[in-house]
Amino acid sequence: MNKAELIEALADKTGLQKQEAKKVLDAYIEIVTERMSENEEIVLVGFGTLIPRPQTQRLARNPKTGTPVMIPARTTVKFKPGKFLLEAMNAHLK
Image 1 (cartoon, helix red, strand yellow):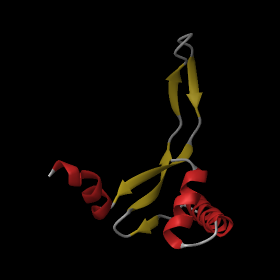
Image 2: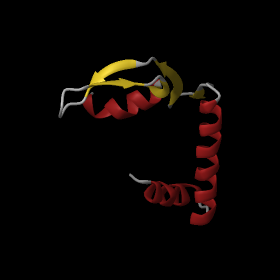
Image 3: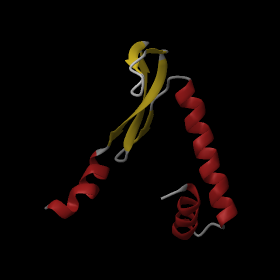
């Protein structure tokens, strides 16, 4: 699912116009981006948690040439799925 498909699904589920659903999604993305850039976790109970995770500087190799390359330190995001999301994803296995 891409962003346009998500906007359409939001509009269908909520009864909002597509333009309004786009505004809601854009606002959500903006808020999450702001909070994550401040190293704040985003917890959506039952769905999951977005956790900012620091990565240290490390040495890697260029796969084509084998030349060592230093990858700078950065912050990445880890997603920890919630109980209800995992149950919904695995319901067909029961």
